[in-house]
Image (cartoon, rainbow, N blue to C red; front, side, top):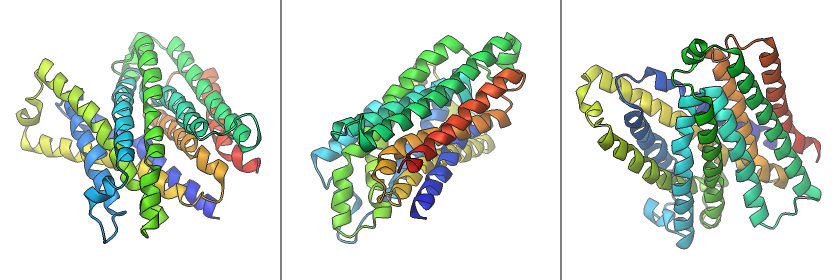
Length: 344
């Protein structure tokens, strides 16, 4: 029962993440870099900070919690800086490929690297026992994501340029593919950052912080690093493109509208890692599911992002064969999530 609760919590967070790019369409008269910076303040600073406060014991303050393990804190933030490159290009992959295809490719790469590298660093033998189950589970997830990517390629080949632009305004397949793969590789650093922050989590548990919330300060450290990368780029783009005026040139009503939708996007985005850390606390009796939790989150993100892609009509006019291939890919993702539990 606890495992089911944990998976459901992760799934709810994943639905939030998959929905986080939808508010972009509601932001008016702002350039991409202006929107990305403002939503990042909410997604990578304010909401993670609020979440981390849940893990602060009465004997400490938030600063003491974040520095409770010295070098560990810097490692987590450093991986966050690297992850920030992935987060930055992740947003661009949505721009050039759309919600469904862009997230599928980026998250597929992220899923593999983010699951297997921490396991290897912990000395897990990937060709026997639970390590082999983990490897096969990741392989199934990657296969599902690859099939979805193939469906995206079929969609592209079957659509006219006008249809492509209607579904995704800045559609560019080759550029989008390169950016999405880079985004996936660098985004896996988030998982490495959470792993690096494990000592902080253990220290907080020893001080009586509930396991449910003990991992949230590590999330904040990683997102701080990511914010540094993204904010630097966005401000540079504001300067180059002369878009600093975005923040002051719009009317008060549009500014409030943009601020609210940026906050909504940030909250929805953060919910995936809030849900991941809470959900993992229910998976402690299953070491294989605990190790596979990152892949589960990424697979669910792909699954739900493609549901949004269907809702937003990004697959409209793609053809029956493409829809069948897409369905097979989604079913493979679902199977990859239940596979580790079936092998117990």
